[in-house]
Image 1 (tube, rainbow, N blue to C red):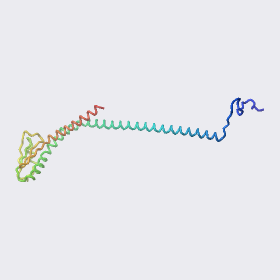
Image 2: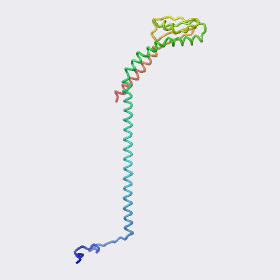
Image 3: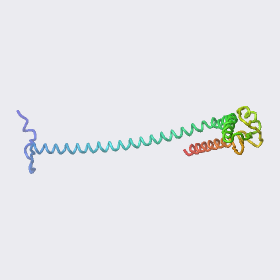
Image 4: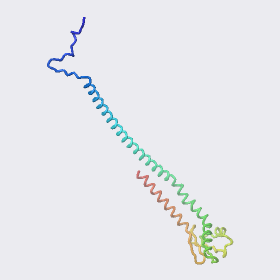
Length: 198
């Protein structure tokens, strides 16, 4: 025995309701339209997600580069400040000693250059107290006339005056050392200011 009489029949139109049956072609068009709408919405979501991801990546990269630049500058400044004692000893001890040891050779070089321009003229070297012997040792013995070396107590170490005939020159390594020290002090001041502004 069949139970079909117990089940409701959905194929028959309900009372007062018109039933519209769609053919296969209309159903296919409706399916294609729904698919295209879904595909378009998915594409728009993907493009929007990519744009947001790209903007976030760009923002993160920019922040990382800014942090890296700041870190590099801070590290460079801190390294410079940590080397301050070495630079101070270089400027206060090493350079003056080097200049003092190299002064006689520099004076001899200058004197020979001046003597070439004024051959046979008397030569006079004025040096600080205690430097005459060091200069005499490095002077070429074949110079004629032999240069006269005179000590002047008013001259500082690293200073000298050269005279060949009417030509006159002053050598002042002290001023050079002072200029180097001032430049270094200015650099350290700027580095400390940069570090305190962070």
